[in-house]
Amino acid sequence: MTATETVTQLPTASVIVPARNEEASLAACLESLAAQTGVAFEILVVDDHSTDRTREIALSFPAVRVIEAGPLPSGWTGKNNAVAVGARPARGEWLLFTDADTVHLPDRWRALLKKPSATAQICSPTRRSKLSEHFRRRS
Image 1 (cartoon, rainbow, N blue to C red):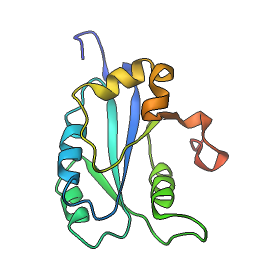
Image 2: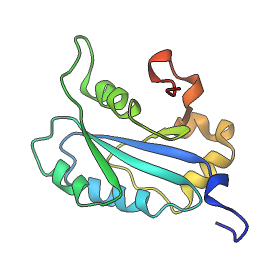
Image 3: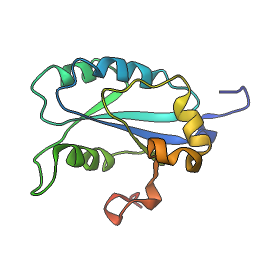
């Protein structure tokens, strides 16, 4: 962030991480997300009925909000449900979805949101206004 850039000028994003039994990789993912700069963001980990230490690991990061995936709707897969559950309480203008077994380069989210249409095919950022009515920002 430059000296003249204020928090209100930064893009706001919610990074949603669906996770099921990801104890082997989740910490590295969350460390790389927490280290991002140039973006005002929140990190939401959606625990999709993990039976390992996934939830415990996510809770060890103070900046991470952990959400339970809840019951699986008929005809849905766990990951689809986890993504939808994570999008509902998200507060960011942008919703960024990433897998729990990924590691993100420093400043990646800032670069992505600087020109989202150029990178949308790779990272799938989604502006809230383009989501179905179910996920639109509350008035």
